[in-house]
Length: 420
Ligand code: S3P
Image (cartoon, rainbow, N blue to C red; front, side):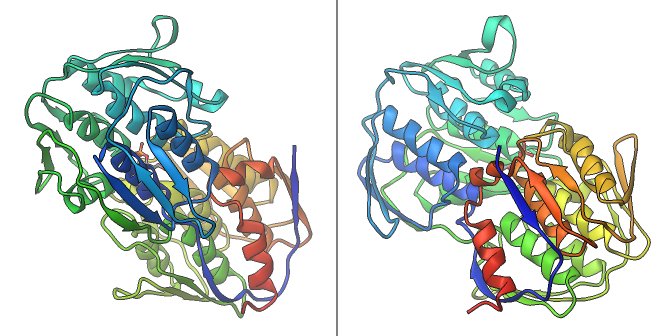
């Protein structure tokens, strides 16, 4: 198991690019696989989660040509059943979106993943897919992965998910592309809009009304897409630059669409000095004194992945920060309520849960030995906290970071060296 050692140090300074957005990367790969023709994709996430989805679309017949500069040319449209199990690795987004796409295609496939994936709830996608008439089942009569899918013969439905989840929305809308009529997803709280945005951008008939998205069956037209920087990765640098005195960091070309920028609003409310340029997408952050805030349950879908690092910001702020309605964190790559608590407690922070509210008291952090629990975002949140701890920190299980941000440690070293 790999270990990353981080000590406190001087300011972070410089410009950097983060990996292409992970949510967008998965979706453009699925769309390219379905398009009848050649698509060109630049700036795809280089994390292992997205590599798994890339391997899977190859296994079902997409022809992928990878240029030395990372540009992908993908010829899709002639998909067939795979010879082997499809391995999503650690990716909840991968398995749920693929379950939707494959449920509509006329062949048998099996989706599986690592130990974390086998624990994560899949009933949230099996239920709507069953309503559409899909034959998708979990392992040994359960609703857990591996998922066996006998695709084809879907009926369009109207579906309101009991959980606010862009993965569920994406799953149902991808299945809807192969249904016999329109499919509508109703959402009480707006979740990230990548599926509907990318459907519209690739010529699919999708209608957005407040709280409702309706897709008609069809296929994308071949497209070119440049994936913008991942706001969830930019959030680590936004917090790091806010809490390390004297820092100034610019994260270039960060996606600015709906339900992804909640962390910017929350940090600003905490007193952070940051600006997300509406034109180019650059996110500029300077160090500032932070104070506590309340993050309401209705804000959570717009920053669900950023809570571990926002909790680090809260631990360095003056006063108390409350994250309300965070029950969904229990079913992420790790139980993030428990793993965030464990991380901050190990570093001398003060943190507690009150039902599904996570409460963090600001104070000082100390260097410690902490664990990733195989969760990339817990590992990176630990590294950010270590920047202001009094003494060195080791993050055990650092290899988890490769699922989404393989270059994180190099980027940190470059920012500590003053950037370029
Ligand atoms: C994602 C949606 C979110 C998020 C995940 C990516 C997506 O999950 O946590 O990292 O790409 O749709 P939920 O939709 O389950 O909240």
